[in-house]
Length: 79
Image (cartoon, rainbow, N blue to C red; front, side, top):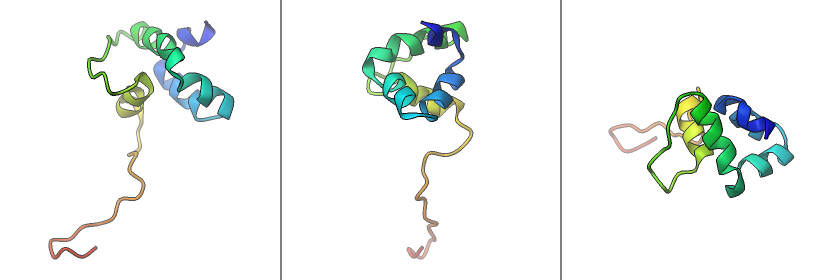
């Protein structure tokens, strides 16, 4: 119940700090927590059904790119 009063960015950061938070916040049963956190920030529901609320939070709130194994591509086809 306490978690539904924090900002979505805080939930995202908590989910990355400890396994217990990760398991709790990334489970399907935590959708209500995320929805309330987004609503508290004035952000409505997302329509794309194949993305979870934590995925939306990462897309909107993360400052880093999630693609870590990016390889440079050149027009010659070699990297």
